[in-house]
Structures are given as C-alpha cells and as structure tokens.
Length: 209
Image 1 (cartoon, one colour):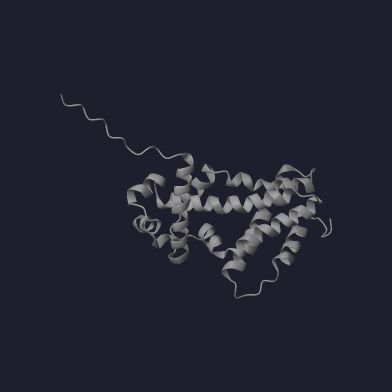
Image 2 (cartoon, one colour):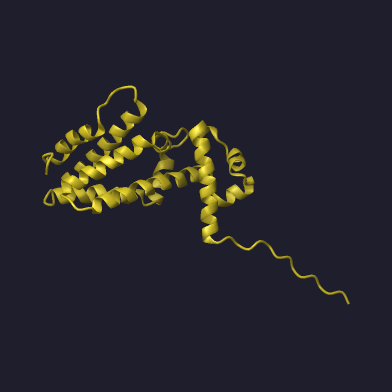
C-alpha cells in the first residue's frame, strides 16, 4: 500500500530579529542609492537589485519606496535625539544644557549634509508624506527635549509664550543648519556664535546663565 506523502514544509517564519535585520540591509542599500542619485531617481526594482533581493521580497519588508525613506529618517532621528536626551540629562544649569543640546542638533546636520538633504529636501516627497510620517511616529514628541529645557529656564512663563519660544528655537536651529549645508560657499560664521545670539533673544537669558 502506498504511503501518503508528507506535506511539504515551507520556510519557517522569520523572527522579529531577522525581520529587522532584513529591513536594515534594505535601508542601507537604499541610503547608498539615495545619496548617489537622489530619492526621486531610484525605483523599487533598482532598490531590490542593490539590496540583492527579489522585488517580491523587497515588498514583503516595505510596501513602498516612501516607507523605506521613512525608515531611514527614523534611524537618523533616533540617533540624533538619543544624543540630545543624553546631553539634556547631564548636570548643569538649564541654560548650559539648552546650549549644549541646541548646538549638537545643529552640528549633527552640518556633519551629515547628505542626511539633512534626505530628510528635509528629498525630491518627490510631498507634504502629505511628511505629515503622515510625523503623525505615525514619535518624532514630534522627541522635540520635547527642547520644550523641557525652555520650561526649566522660565517655569513661570505663560504657556502661549513658551510655545512661541519653542517654535522660534526650532525654526532658528533648522535655519542655521539649512544655510550652512545648502549655501556653504558663504561664511555664515561659527554655529556656536550664531546660536548664542539667537538664544539670548529667544530666552532672554544672559550668555553665562
């Protein structure tokens, strides 16, 4: 009597660690291509070739090219804000800690201009794409490190005034980074000096507070 054939076993499901490793391999390949050719010029098929996976496998990890870009953004922001949070926890006056955190924020983007361009200047990324990313991740919440330090400087300030100062600070930091990265042929001066002038105006705190 013929024995029934045993059912063929498929591949075991990937563990969370394997999935994350696969995403990182694809993200690293995407970063190379985005750096070299720009986000808008790279197709998913080309990404699959660079990552040495099939298009089907690529789509099993990321549903779209924009999802890959957002994964890369999260890597950048996580690295940056982990550093900022560590600086904010160090001993020192609120003014000194705010200066250290703000300067590191600028220095990070200036040291990695290709990352700045990929996050803030990627061709083919719409405002809706950015909005959905901000709403779906914790990035906006991580900017609260600045809010906390500003509140420590002026604990009795009205809430609306505190919000205005926070918005002014973030706009100023991004402005210094943007000009330094994108108009590098002009001597803008040292970021530390520009920051000191801005913080004195935004916080009304003397330089040595």
